[in-house]
Picture 1 (cartoon, rainbow, N blue to C red):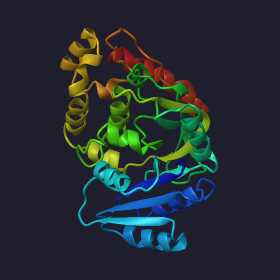
Picture 2: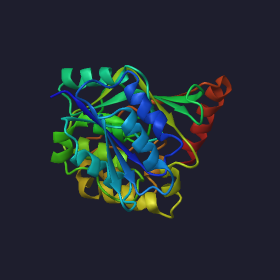
Picture 3: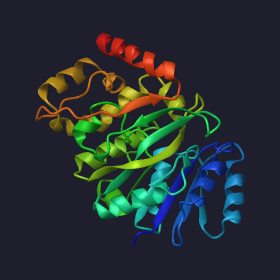
Length: 299
């Protein structure tokens, strides 16, 4: 009942896939777990690398090969639908797990009888995972809908979290809007508005690669794509927001991009607690808060 199916959608991930998969088997994999790699119509050597990894760790890796590129949310749903275990962990094909951290969030989701559990920290890096440039320190404990809309520094946008397959099925799976912009944020939102218990586990972390070549960055360059998708996601659930928030959303289509500076107020008037960003460069820790205050004033 407590084994995990690790789901990895992979599109043109030849440079990063092996490092991500190896991090699962480095202190995070138990007997009875499985890894499902969904090759999403890659045009590079991703499929060949996946096959090599499947041979290396045989029979613990299963490969699903999409003939055409379906996008990240669709690939997640395809992989999860074929998962044999009751717990699902999403790992992006360019991110890295830290040894022993999966056990911590699995223990927490069982102990707290939660539907979904996430790491308390994101450690961001570009090329070398040992060179962390900054960290997201998320509010730990139960993540509420108010917290979710208080800013962007919470696990929702990242998508690398553990949850029950039953809950994924009950809420209607991932929205398959676009190729992969905001699908993790939308899934977190869908969990919360459907009453799922979402916990953020203290003293846990993973390594999050950020790059100008990432799927998010590529999709976000499409004109109005982010606005269209986020508004489509919240559209059926506007009853959760205050009248003030509804008027703001109508006036400001880019509300999502401004969440750190203009949190959304829920119908009961509540505004949650956002996490914080800490830079490894001490000068940035001094100047970034000033820059953020200026942005908040302008918004």
